[in-house]
Length: 438
View: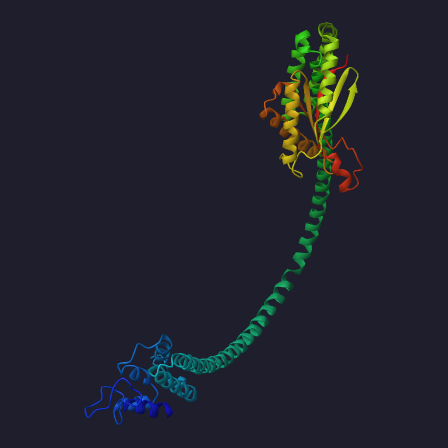
């Protein structure tokens, strides 16, 4: 082999430039003609190990060391060594790389060592692939035999089961027919009863929803009447009736929380009557006690200050002697949540300054939704948003006794609700500042 000849040449000293040939035995261990090491080299088992162990040359590069370790791997088997042509080329490249390294051709030595690694690994990969292919063929044959046996067993088992099933069906057909007739009769009767029960539940649910909405409307009306009475200082000028209306309204709220709609409506109706009576009693006393001119000037100043707030529109609503200055906040919350949006918080800061500047006015907070949904759900969403604004103002220092909450749900549509764009303007918060018209 070329590698052997070069190796022996190295052993005679032709490639050991650092040692001179003398009459003494050369220090290089590669002068091994006739020695058993030469036979090991010819068999291409450990040529790298012997070669790289001699000649006091400089430290080998990692590429040559890696090739040597790969070539002398003890896990190599006989079939792997059959790739002699690749192994021989790898050995040749190893010897060449060694010689080039000794002659300081570093780049060539590294290049040939890397090529030797590639050829060695390619030979091993080819043998491993052939071995895997043989295993796959063996497994395919064994799998086919197993599948054939399973198929025969399945056919035999299917035949036995079919016979058993036929006997069972013949034995039970009469009993099944009778049972099916009885079951069908029972099922028809059960379905009829279930349909009647579901229909009644639906009727009861609709009636309950209706009474729920009526109870909510009654509470809203009672709260409005009580706040109207506040505009004439009914708590001061009609104390007994005002206290009775307040107590009755509290009872109505408790009944509402307990889902007692009829009791809620009854107590809210009584609260309204007491509030109206308190209003009638307190109005003349209030009008006499108040300085009309001062009040009107103060009202105009309030209206001017409200109109000057950026991003908030205002409008007036009058119900008999009750004047409402309504502040409309269009983008108070994040989407469909009861969470204040940044622009909503900024608007409430301005509202807080307005209410602080005019501390004697009663306030009603209303949360409006679109009309896409069940009335009860819309009312709950409306109430949650009104509560969020209420507590936001309380947190900003506004006296909670001045404020009340209204939850009209989807009742206050301001545009076409047939489209998403049309419903958007209806989702808003309104803060009504209440005062008596003189």
